[in-house]
Amino acid sequence: MNSKYWSLGLLVTSLFLWLIFLGNSPLRDWDEGIVGQVAREIWRNPVDKMVWLYPTLGGEPYYNKPPLIHWLIAVAYSLGGVNEWTTRLPSAVLTALGVPLLYSIGNLVFNQSLPALFTSLVYMTMLPIVRHGRLAMLDGAVITFFLLLLLCILRSRQQGIYALGIGFSLGLITLTKGMIVLLMGGIASLFILVNRQFDLLKNLYLWIGILLGNALPIAWYIAQWQHYGENFSKINLQSQTFARLVESVEGHSEPAWFYLIEILKYGFPWLLFLPGGLYLAWKKRHTTWGCLILISTVIYLVTISFMNTKLPWYVMPIYPFLALAVGANLNKIWQESKFKVKLWGGFFAILSVAGLGGCTYFILTDPQPVLIAMGIILAISMGIAAWLVIRQHRNFIPVLFAGIYLVLLLLMSSKSWIWELNEAFPVKPVAALIRQNIPAGIKIYTSFSYSRPSLDFYTDCRVIAVPVSVLQQMLSKKSYLLVDNEAWEKINLNQSKIIGESNGFKLISPDDGSL
Image (cartoon, rainbow, N blue to C red; front, side, top):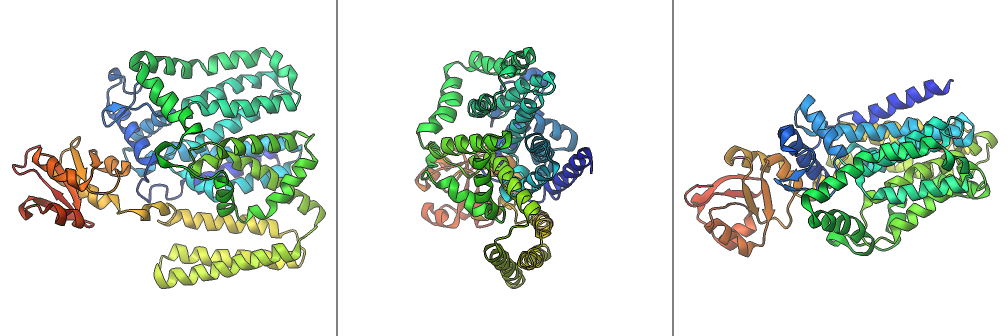
């Protein structure tokens, strides 16, 4: 089949997976709640107030990240209103576009369509990419812009004008997540040198693209520095960027092997074929695809592993290169029909049993039809894959793709794909209580152990976590309180001050009801 048709098919299937029931769950702490608030403040303020240029969070300057994704979400709000679906839409679409982009990269580095197809299908069915790519976060978009950068580098070997796209891709990365462009630009530069594309450095289109593509990001940084002065450089560049290399920002410290554990936890079933893929890349390290996999994987993984601040989604940009390695190995298996029958067959059999176990668990404890169907699909597809492996039939590969895709499709159709929502109280009922009784923009003090940006988003207020000892003082200062039962007993407030209850929280007004 023509590669254009494959690209179109991959685009349609990826968009379907990323967009299905996109708004069926509340926004997640932390990034989604913050990104949504910043975008809403851009959307609701007139252009002449310049909030689009100088973003705010709760009316205060927002220094953390450049505003490209926030701009796109604000546009989505203007078209479809403020809701979960429009909040997540730009990031989800951009992440889904990475699937056909990776297919195009695979075609160029492998000079074959089959390993490229396997690579893109592996990438499309990686749980972290699908799950985090559907959230209103910046990482999925950054990966897609990085893939666009690599595609432009590869295309420029035949058509020099594609070098323009290199500079614009760097600019998009910068305008999305700031200084991560230094790491990604460094990986791309090393790949150019190792791949011996020295003529690219003489290409005038490259330098024009770098000049034009980075003009807007540079102008934005200059505008922030001129407007905020030293505060911007201290917070954006120092505290939120370079400090993460040497300090544990906000307590997010993990050992150096943290990301290896993350890959192990969420990489199956493709992790089974990763060692063979990396070994192939090492054997073929003089090829374009071999050096791309090794350079990108090693440099990126080493860099984030030795950063002091660690968050699970920092590892996401490595997945396209792991997918390339797995795709190369699957292609070799397809062509040569060499099987590790005991290892692969046994592993898929275990997954089949796990699917049956999951199905039974959901029937007994959480009877959601979608999750029950997910367990059944996993059990059937992995069982068929195990049987085909035992028969040494290469069609176990398309069965894996189809089975994992359907499992992910069902998971994303459920209300369980953002499992972090179960870590704390549901925000929407509590937010509804606050919205019914308190005007937007009011500060509320809560006994909960930490502030929740998602609650701020839904209430359109700022809900600030403070120690219980401070709550009594805040009430005397005519502030509203949101307290749980334990805090209520400790501060022993008068029952008449309760104006509503929800999910174990009491909303308490000042004595005179003033704001």
